[in-house]
Length: 169
Image (cartoon, rainbow, N blue to C red):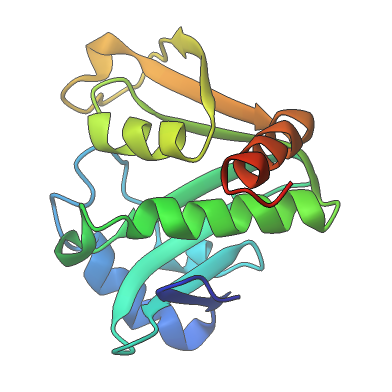
């Protein structure tokens, strides 16, 4: 799968070291519990590379059918460049156009403003704020978790509006 600047491909076992290096950055993992990298190598995970340079950007995930969960993790060098939004939008489009997803959801900590911005730029809307009783909570957990979502119908409507705004429809 290609976007304007990214190449996304299904994650492979050979990507494990790239994923480990990404997960070793405490700032990348600031709002996330650590998990074994091998858990990120299933069919729903995509390794993302900058098309122009071939550099590993991070990974994107769209897990499940019907209601699919969106996730992403990028190296800090690629934060603030629009890559998270670009890759996430590509997976959302793929999920809806392939018939795999009827609704896309994404969850993050309330305090993770950067991730929340990405979700909003992708068209997801805040659904709820909730609290989870974690045995060893991360800093900021007292503010809760947030869920964002987008249905296929909402996405299709937004696509039609985008096409009209671009003078296509």
